[in-house]
Every structure is written in structure tokens, then in C-alpha cells.
Length: 518
Image (cartoon, rainbow, N blue to C red; front, side):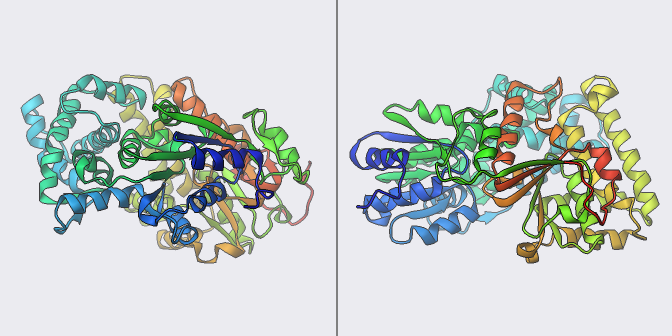
């Protein structure tokens, strides 16, 4: 077999997979060709596809790998793999997927629970806020495999994620943990159930000679356990990057990579050469991740900084990244107004914006703008009262910052020349329409950029990387630096910093000339 096209790191991985009897975890830096490497490793095994299971982190990766590994491996997302286990466990009976299952249960029962615990009636607003809070704790508890009765672990989750651990809410979460497995008997499940419930039916989990899994640094405890169950009696090959762990906010275990590495009979191998970025870009990235190496044949690449906005700064095919959503939405609107095709990635952002606009129920742009200001003040006050902290502290909590970012997304368009709310909604849909994405300037949050690349990447408000407050947890601080690393390594040839504050960016107009100060 011709190994000339492969690096020594890749050959070491191929040999370890084929010739050793150990589990393998690969620490693959950004742009190191990890997908290419594990596809080649799968093919070299030359086993029947039913002996090799590839577990992908999301549907798009699964679809891509299904084509590349046809005839070599079975490919599933973690959720579809878990769903298949449940179909077996339920003897092929129909399973209904209902992601509102638990929130509906909460809304139906929370008044009774509240009267039982507090002997008080609750307003509709209080019911809704409590349901959201309880559902969040419940989801985090499930993916972290917290058992019924373990109130201390529930408190630990609340502490880790900055959630107020009201006793009554924890008691309700605990009650849900007791009942969620019983409720599965009705064969009505939500998406989290797809990963969690199969662990109760372990005898139905098929085992394989080899299990491959990517992005292992972003697995939650339930996903990691499901992967290990599938590999029981065989071997696993886990690929990830400690420094690309960025999904802790939605329940991923920040130490997932290290916990997999600690599984008995597991060796760790590096994949340290970046084949994506120019050498000057890698020099900058090495300040964050010292072990990353540029390819010997890498072009030099450019690192530039600009202090002004002009039309000529943006080229078709550019990727524009930001820590927050609001500056992206504001810039996208300016680009479209100036005849530059642009799109913001993230249908969930558009959905949340439209929900907020519908919630406001305003007839005019001016009314909506005032509602946004009032909503931010109200939210800060509610958080301050709920957590018994000052308004200043409340405005620095994750909950406030996240909602404020979405409200600012809308506000950045409200200051434009749009005349009514209906026109505003149409523009939001236009900004997030990805049908013409190949011909557009693509704007994305850094979180949504993982797995993407572009010849030219612009970083908006680089001072927001990392975004840290004095209330940030240690794991949040680490993941903020990881996010910076992810963003910087999306650039193949040019990394451009738009060195402006968020306020400067919002106030700036797109000029016709190219008078940027480099």
C-alpha cells in the first residue's frame, strides 16, 4: 500500500488500528485532516460493514461519511443509533417523537406541584418561566446521567451552569427523573431520550468489532456511554481535539476527551499537522495551541487588520465570524442594503428573533424598538430578584447576555429605514436564507463555524474573543479560549481582523472606497 501521501502521524494511527489490540483516541488539531484519516483507516480494515460502526456527531457529517464509507462501515448519528436501539427494545412498535413532551407535562402539572410545595398560586408568566428553568435542569441532568434521588448532583449541575437551585424546582426535576423511564413505555420520546433511554436497554445495543466516533471532545456523558456500550467486546477509535471543546453550554462534558483517554487499554496518538491554514496564520494560532504545526508545503498566508468598513473589504465566498449574533445581523443588513449578497448561518437564530417579535405584538418599528429596551430592563430586574443580586451583576449573567444578544439582533435592523414589522420579518427570513449561500458572504457565530473553512475569514470584534466576565466558571473560560482557536483556524489563506468595537461596528456605514487603515 502506498503510504507516501500520508504523514508519519497518520501512518502511526493506521498501524495502531490494524496491528494493536488497543482502543485509540486521536488528538487531532484543527485542519489536520481527521476525517480523511479515519475514512482511510476504516477502509484499510477491510471488514464487513456490519462489523464497523461509525458514530457521527451530527446529520451533515453522517451524510458525508455515508457516501465515503459505503461498503466499509455503517454510519449513524448518535441519535439515530440510539433510536434504532429503542426500536429493537420496543419490538418494532411505533415510536412517536415529540420534543415538547416534557414541557407539556410540566405546564399541565406545575400548578399542582407549586401548591403542594409552596401553597401558592402561580401566574401564567411564572408558570412559563418555571417550566423553562425546570426543563433546562432536567435536560442537563439526563445527559449527565444523574439518577433519581441524587439531589446533590442536581445542585452541582445548577452550580456549574449558573442556575439558581431553588429546592422546589430540584424536587420537580427529581420527580421527572423518576418518571421519565416509565413514560417511555408509551413509546413517546424526545430527542434527548434517543440517547439516554437506550442505556436502560443495554442488551439491545449491538456491539461491533470497531466503533469510530468523531468530535469526541464534545460528547455528553450519555453519548459517551452509548459509544462505549457499542464498542464493548471490540475496540473504539475516538477522534477529537481537547482544544476544540466548545459545547459545554449545552451539556457536553468538558472533560469528555480525557475521560475517554482514561478508559483501560486505550492509547492516545497525535495528529498535529494543520493542512488548512497558511504558516503566518498558524504562527498566530500557536499562541493559543502551541503544539499545532503548519504543513511543510503551506503557503505563507496573510494576517491583516482593518479599522474601517468598506464595500471592497468583503468578497464573494468570504466567511465572517463573530462571538455574538447581533453584530452579524447588523452587518448582513448593511451588506444587503448595499447590493452585496450575504447570508447569516443559523436558522435557530432567525426562529428565536421571530418568536421575540411575535411576543412583542407591536404594530410599528418604533413600538418594537421601545419594547426591546423595556424587555432588557425587565429581564435584568427579574434575574436580579430571582438570584438576589444587583442589576449590574444580573446584566453579566449568561441568561441575560444570551437574551440581550437576540434582542440586539432585532434592534440592529430596527434602526434602519424599514417601515413596518411585516417588512422586518421578511428581511430576517432573507438574511437567513441559505439557498444562494455559494455566491454569498457567509456570516456565522464562531460556535456554528466548526467544521467550516474559507480562503478568507474576517473576524468581527476580535476583542470579544475570549468573552469572559468575573462570573465565568473555569470551564467556561477554557471553552472561550477554545472558541477563539476554532475561529482563527477556519482561514485557509487570509485571516482579517475588523478591529472595531460592537458599538463602532453598529454605527459604521459601508463606504464606497478602500480607505481602511491597515
